[in-house]
Amino acid sequence: MRTIKFNELIAEKNLSHGWTSPSKIYTGKESGCRCGCRGNYWEADSVGFKRAFNKIKKINPDVLLFNDSDELNKWVSEVCPSWSCTLQQPGTCFAMEYDNSVWIDLVLPNDRTITVYFEDV
Image (cartoon, rainbow, N blue to C red; front, side, top):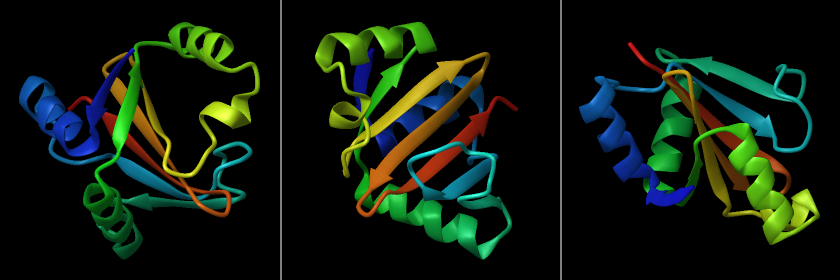
């Protein structure tokens, strides 16, 4: 695990993998699944996508970047046994890197989130 600013992570991925923008963005409820029943998925050419991406870039949060789900689960169990006291607090931003992809989850107030998905091109 390492910590990196959102905009720095984007720049790093652009340089190392040739990524230019996320493949999609989810906005909606933080709690629950990401099937789309509690929020919306936005494609790159949509207004919702542009608004969400600009918002997270403007906030530029510190991102806790994990290499895989095992590393994430270990960190959560060591830092706090209650998932909600660690990663679901407003302002928390964490990411998972896997199989040439990255997703980044920014927790917003009122159980809201912006989740950004990048895929290697």
